[in-house]
Each structure stands twice: as structure tokens, then as C-alpha cells.
Image 1 (cartoon, helix red, strand yellow):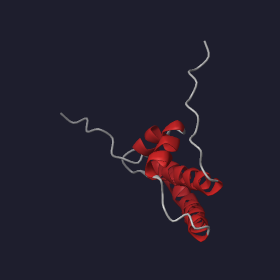
Image 2: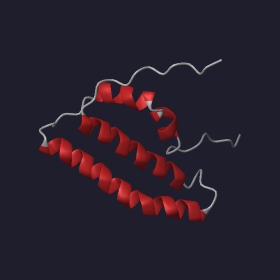
Image 3: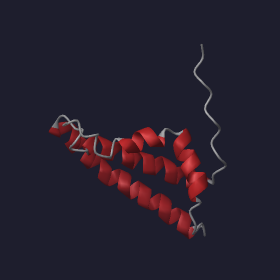
Image 4: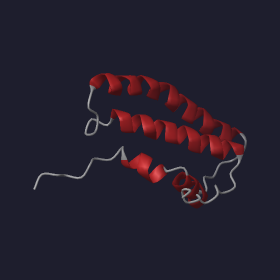
Length: 102
């Protein structure tokens, strides 16, 4: 049985698409660094080192949008794109895990 078909991505400008991609890169790295979920320091260290580059790329995506006159973020549209790209699961890794102490 084939997996369920994902909803289509909403129409995005190239700059908005780049913003979403770079944002998710940063979120993935922060999830790997999260001390409440991380199991070894080396993995967290490598993710932290990569975070510097990823944050600069995110900054450049936002700067490009601003230079092009895209001064407004369309939250509903960008949120739909994030959901299609598994953003809810990916951003959950940044949060604290549920407390399992009774």
C-alpha cells in the first residue's frame, strides 16, 4: 500500500522557499543540540558548529527577501509549507521532552 499523498506545498516565492528550507536546517540542528535530548557531546558539538553556517544562510535568505521588497511574512502560508515539510515533528525536537517523573 503506498503512503498517503502529502498535500501540495502552497505557492511560495523562491525567496520564501529558501527561507523555509534554511529555517528547517536551523531547527534540525537545534534539535540535535538540545541537551534534554542529546546523548553525546560530540554530536551536539558538530551540530553547534554547523549551526553557525546555517544561521548565516537563514540571515541571507531573510536579507534577500528584504532587498527584493518582500517585507511581510505571510504566516498562514508559511505555516502550511512548514506542516507539509514535517515542520511540526522537526520543531518538537527543540522543545523539552515530556516530564516522565511521576
